Image (tube, rainbow, N blue to C red; front, side, top):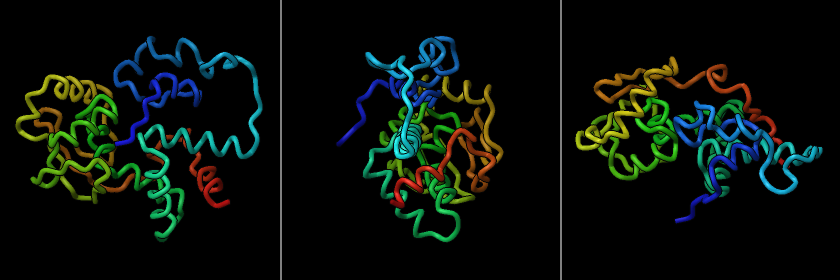
Length: 208
């Protein structure tokens, strides 16, 4: 199975902002962005202007890296969003946000999206009482997500849940950190998602 093997901190530095790929480390002064906020490589500190295409490409790469998708997977999500009614850019973000691995991360059951994805693949998550091991599974408002009984004993999940509870949860999620379960109450509004994401640039890139 294909995977992105690039060092996570290098990915953040390449995009010039925190993508929160390393769990708790991203919230400390050990974060690479805090130490070296310039692109990696020999010419990383040189000022270089991006073309219009370059700006669009960087925004697409940033969004792809945040959610941990390969190019083919990301393009598939875009095509489905483009076929839906409404604003394509918002449809794209909502599809990414409602993925099971993302919701598992947002509920604090994994320290990062990659860790949450691993938990899902290892049969550690129940959706409406049934085991689901597909990270891209699309949740619907009203779905209940819970850590499987055996997985609740894992110290990493408990630690991630405690850290998540300390930072708080989005209003569109209902989470019980003690019981390690939660509810996907509703789709997020665009204002609930990071303002640093400019999905219109991604749409412009794919529309060419």
